[in-house]
Image 1 (cartoon, rainbow, N blue to C red):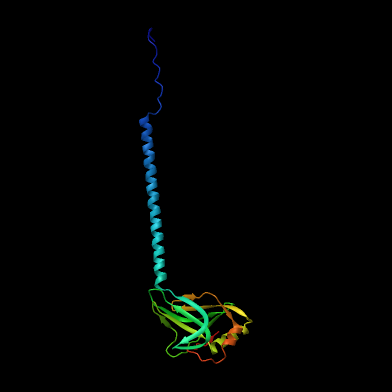
Image 2 (tube, rainbow, N blue to C red; image 1 turned 60 degrees about the horizontal axis):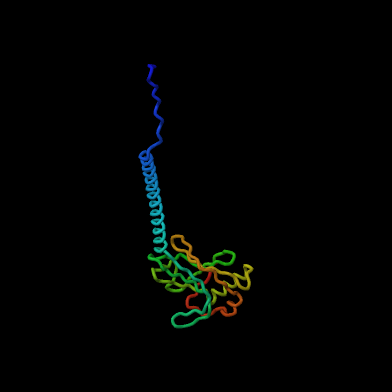
Length: 203
């Protein structure tokens, strides 16, 4: 090396400038924004599909529904009052008619007992139009037969009965449980009581 001249030292590396840091931050922010946008779009799609399925299910349920009730009370028909009995009622709050294939009650052991409707002008299958209802009865002979059937199955005192109707499409519509006093029913309803709609029963 010639005299009087010193060797040039390499310049030290400089840390990234503010501009370089800001550029990296912008790129990271852009990636995060894209990820958030994709996640938001996916979430919106899931929510939309879920809401659409729930709305479709609600429409389907409303379209063909049947509210069933089972009660024990005095019967009234044509302005007359008859001895107490079981009333099995089906109301249609939906938008489509429901065709009843059969109906009855479930005993405490789950055995179905079907009504055997023989009343003139009322038979299965029976169509229940939207906003309408139908009622079948267990009273008189039919109620006595039901009480005897319960006793023959080993039941006594107060038991739980559940009313039901089956529709023509195979749907089962049930009532809330009813506490039914066998002895009280047999005392209040003598055998052979006159009935506005005696269904009879089919175990």
